[in-house]
Image (cartoon, rainbow, N blue to C red; front, side, top):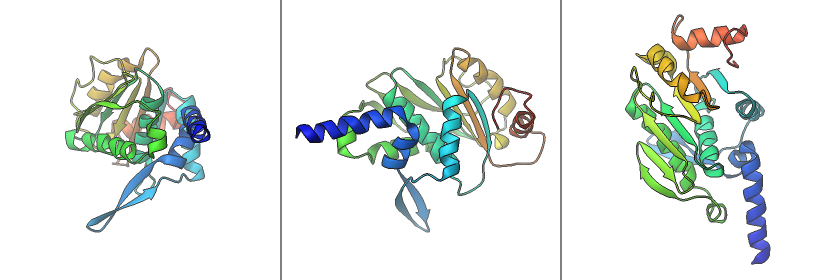
Length: 217
């Protein structure tokens, strides 16, 4: 038994030190297959490992995503890692609407529920669990919010996820509201599929490619 406990602690230490290891070894995602859902291990591609490394070293990241790249799942898995292995973290999730933002909460909860018992015995437990908020016993929390003009303004965030920004009605106003929430050292990840030119996501991405705005593209 002592050897088993030791292995579990070693795995916990490996996971806490490296989100890519945690995701690649322990996260299980779901993939729609017609009317059913298939559960699959989240085995990372080389580019996804690189993306995780970018998240570890950059405070502001803007990503152009496409279908089947797993970017939303990857950002949710990164948020889960942060909340499990660091105390007192605050993650805010925004998308086109409340329903889409809640989907990120669902994905995080799904990956959490599918972790093996050996690892779950060494991580914090949930004290709040609903479709809009998860709170862990270590004080970390993740909350989904509607993409309105002033959402998130009162928070101090460790991580802000803004999904499908190119399709948000109030994208510019929301960005102005949440940007100050990471001023004390938090992180902002903006990701979206393309939706023409001139919108906030397009501007942030093209400016980041030119090194003009402090984002990593």
